[in-house]
Amino acid sequence: YSSLVISPDNRKLAFLAWNHPDMPWDAAELWLADIEDNGDLKNLKKVAGSKNESIFLPRFANDGTLYFVSDKTNFWNLYRYSTGVIEAIYPMDAEFGLPLWVFGMSTYDFYYDNDKTYIVCTYNKDGFDNLAIIDVENKKLLEIETEFTYISNLVVKDDKALFIGASAKNPKSIVQLDLKTKEFEVLKKSRELNINPGYISSPEYLEFPTENNKTAYMIYYPPKNKDFLAKKNEKPPLIVKSHGGPTAQSVAILNLEIQYWTSRGFAFADVNYSGSTGYGREYRQRLYGNWGILDVDDCANAANYLAKKNLVDENKLIIRGGSAGGYTTLAALTFRDIFKVGASYYGISDLEAFHTDTHKFEAKYDEKLIGKYPEQKQIYFDRSPINFIDQLSCPIILFQGEDDKIVPPNQAKLMFDALKKKNLPTAYILFEKEGHGFRRAENIEKAIDSELYFYSKIFGFELSDDIESITIQNLK
Image (cartoon, rainbow, N blue to C red; front, side, top):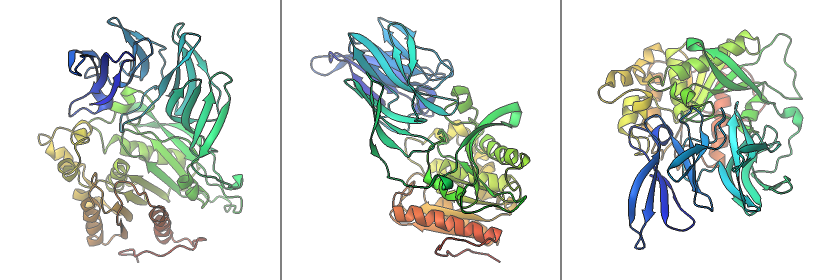
């Protein structure tokens, strides 16, 4: 259950519900009930949602009309429910919703002016967020021009809209929009930056061909550092990132982790592989039954695409990722021959162990991504990198949080021990008091510096940074 909302007259309750093995972005249902004077619920009924439809973010307007987001037409669009009728607000091939990973997500809110109801909303189209106001009565959408290409946590108070915004040039900030004047004000930046633009790589949004005559997407960052010039005909090494989730989306914002690499001579491809959010339900569900296959194919094809364009060195292809992206990384290194080295951050190496040793929310998620367990146990075995170490022939560095409850440390330790036994160069860094994703600044810095140090030893280049050395097993 999630997203409980009460009508303005305190007489109705709306909420979302779903059942395993579905996740809320698969088949969340919208339910509505009357609230009795004593707080009991009666006349409970399902308003929307099915096995082929996901509902997101129910909200009551002041007049008691219930609004929500549904992906029944492939894209998450806005709808309203009143007097037993569901009506589309403004159909678009764009995403007005998000996968419900956490509570409190918000992509729209209401604005009232001269007794008229408007919806202030953000939607994702072609990989970028947009900001708009919808005239609900006339069903007209007004685009609001903005420099922000990432917009989240949107709320409205009186005639002001507030959200977290970012762009390729600006870090995440709390932004206020005056809905009458359409003027923006940055209230608080996540960090104050004074970086010379000569060190900042600008992203390029690319589509590329992948398996089964399909298209996938990536954000490409060329290397950039005003103080250095590559030798003639020298191409940069490429880092391919596989994001987590796997139901997530990489976005083109000022990400200092990416700029760390591009300012040091690496090209960087942030891949929105099959299964990513932002491209409709059909694209998200491509990965169902194909985790460890299509995501791996898309990451490999992204690297091949850039190599064929002569943008990167085909002999220096790297893949890195965290969580589900860590699994994609390990699978790509195990079951494909394209990448020369990789870095896994709290990645899954044994799918069967993950199935039996994870938290409730994701307890059945892998049955959508892989297959029913234990009926299809063999697939779990066949797609687990730990079972096919004999196919591995390249170095891997592994990072793990000691307190990780989602992907326990034994997943990385098993992989590390197997790599050592096979005499492949490897390193394993375990951070105390860290969970699923590192939070302490010193650990984040230590991890990325260690990753760079590892690559320098594998590819044999000198570091310009003063970085603490790490122990690399089987390094010749």
